[in-house]
Length: 87
Image (cartoon, rainbow, N blue to C red; front, side):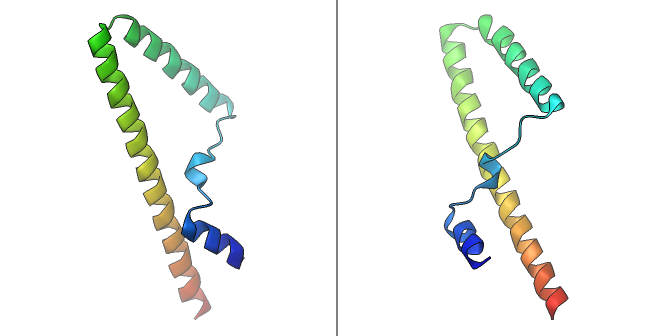
C-alpha cells in the first residue's frame, strides 16, 4: 500500500492515461469522431488545417491536465474520508 501511495505522489501512476476504450460505446464514439474529423479537415485550407491541428493538440493537453487534477482531487477526497472514518 505504501508503495502505491508513493508512486501516486511522484507521478509514476497516471490513471488518466490508462483509460479503457474497449467498450462498444467508446469504440463507436471514437470511430464517429474520427469520421467527423476527416470530413471536417477535408474542406480546410492548409493554413486552416494547421491552426485546427494546433488547437486540437492544445485542447488534448488541457483535457489531460484537467483529468489529472480531477484524479488528484478524488484521491485527496478519498484520503480525507478515510482519515475521518478511522478517527
